[in-house]
Length: 162
DNA sequence: AATCTGATTGTTACA
DNA sequence: TGTAACAATCAGATT
Image (cartoon, rainbow, N blue to C red; front, side, top):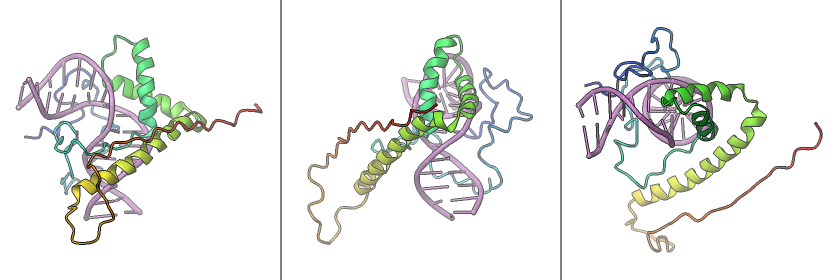
């Protein structure tokens, strides 16, 4: 049962038709120490959805850009239904973009990261055993810490000379 | 039916 | 320090 082992091209026959000969892209993992093979968690949250409160990792600038790119890509390529197509196209475009272009995306990603830290902290707290013999300074109030940090910071003041 | 896969890069987390 | 896996997406594919 190596359901999780599926090579870059094994079961699916749509995009998996790609030649696995020199595809070095799909080998991000198992680069030199596959001995452990002790994955901390499942690969997707779908299966390991045991903790619905667990915050997902912050999307990287690339992913933030991808979300927008996907719309555009699908709009111009409504026939393309392969996720890999957008991934590849987005990847190349991303590399083609200048850091100045990625800047706004990185800024967005930075916010996600900040929120993630906050969420993960709260998540850790919930996991921790609150029943700790000690003096707690009125910690939990209603065990319902809903996020409420909606701040729109637009720091765009850098366009003058050209 | 529900889980899983592929592909991109970045980022996070552990040893 | 470095590796390893996951973050979204979408429709097919597999269990």
